Structures are given as C-alpha cells and as structure tokens.
Image (tube, rainbow, N blue to C red; front, side):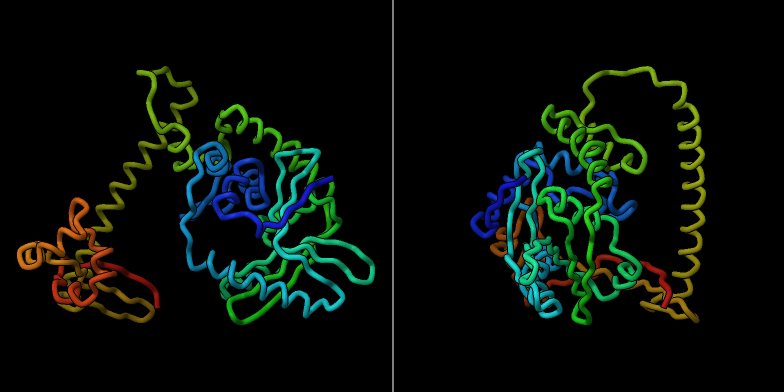
Length: 336
C-alpha cells in the first residue's frame, strides 16, 4: 500500500521540496477544516497550504518552539518506550501512498509491539504546560486529523500521540483508525484540493476560510478596470459602512479615555488600581543623528537604507546603550 524511506537521509531543503509533491499530515487540518486557528495571528487557511505547494520553495524560518520540538523528539520517543516496554520504535520514517501518490507521511516514529508484531504510528508533540487543559478531554482536532492522515497513508489500524507539557508532565493518547473519516478526508477534501494544485487554481474560499488575509493573498493584483457587483453585496456594503462608523466613534472615545488616564499618570510610568495596571512607559530608540556624526563607520555598517536598529542593538550592545534615546512613550492597560 505504500513505500517508505528514512527521513534522516534527506537534507532539510530536500524535505521542503518533497512537501510540495504531496499532502502531508501537518497539512491535513488546514485542508479539511479550512482554518486551523481562527482569528489568531498564526491562523492557517487552505489557501496558505495551496501557495506552499505551488510557489518556489523557501527555507522556513526556525523558532525556539520548532527547534525544541526537534531536539526533544528522541526524548519523547524514549518516554513512550518507557511507558510501553513491550514496544520498539523506528524513528523518522517517510511514507508515500501508492493508491494516491500525492498523499505523504513524515512520521516521527513507527512503533511495533514486540509480542504481537502490530505496527502503529507515533506522533510526538511538545507544548507549553499552560496548554495542558487544551488536551484534558480529548486530542485536539487538528492533531487527531494528522494521525488519521498517517493511518490513511500507512494502512495501520491505530496510532499514538505522545505529548510533553513543558518540563512538567508527559501524556500519551491512543487513536483508532476511522475509515469513514479517512474516506471523507480523501474524497471530499484532499482530491479536490490536489486538483487545484495540479491546475494551479486557488481553491474557493468560504465559511471560516474567508478571512481578510486569505482573500488578499488570493487576489494580490488588479487585472481588470471594473465589474458590476451582485445585488447581494448591497447588504454587505451597508453593514461595512455601519461598522466603520462605529469604529470611528469608538476610536474617538478610546482616545478620550486614554487621555484622561495619561493626565492622571503625568510623568509616572505606571499606575495601579485594584486589578488593573496602567502604564505609560518610555519608548527607547537610537540617536541616529549623533551616531552618524560621531561614528559614521558604524552607522554605514548597519545602514539599510536607514539604520537597522535591530541588528545594531544585537551586535553593538555597549554602543546601543551609549546612543540610546527616548523616542516617545507607550500606553497600555492590563489586568493584574
């Protein structure tokens, strides 16, 4: 039903290129649910996955969370084996479906019951300890779909998710193969999506996938002068205008309230009241005029075309302190 190869035999660039050749487990939730994290800064729509497949491969920026996940993966596998001494593990395995050649699976480990010979999927997760409540009642749907995807590709009957919650706890979850769900994922979501990739036709957006970021990405350039809108747009336009007026009114009131609080703070950087903290802290920057006059060679080194203060502060820490200057103040209100 499938072919497999060791993931470790691939370079990271090759792995990124392979991801463009098919649908992987980490794509499953965005394709099937359209939006994985609705309304959050890191929301991912089906359109994001589409562009990942059709645009030139770009090296993904790493992060502490991603790096820690990779570093801790062997430890989580060890934890699973410690909790399940009758199982053995083969880490880092790639699978590709023969029936649907665009379905791929980059699996953290394949685990085998030493006594029965049963083989299963093991997916490793690391998350902040504060997210434990998110996992209390059941496996979060995006991760459940990810494991079902792996079971679809491998043909296995069950899988496990092993989760490390910060440095405070370990938990594992068993997921049984759901053939009805897998059939829906493949025929109602994966096949239509991959047809879009093959024809380079962006998938239609509807429901939760119809986000501002998604439609801006779908239509980045105007290519015709104008069209007649459908009559159904009239109610949308009227509501947009009403909401816009409300925003203007609320924004003005917000400014008035902020002014009252700043007038109370005066030159203090913070004020406290019961469960609230109001702050109006100095915002610091670099005195670029003085830096240019006194150390032009340093200024030129970080010019891009104006001074790249991020790089300057990072690499010239002592100088950054010497040329620091107050550029304004930042206002905030938060609960204690």
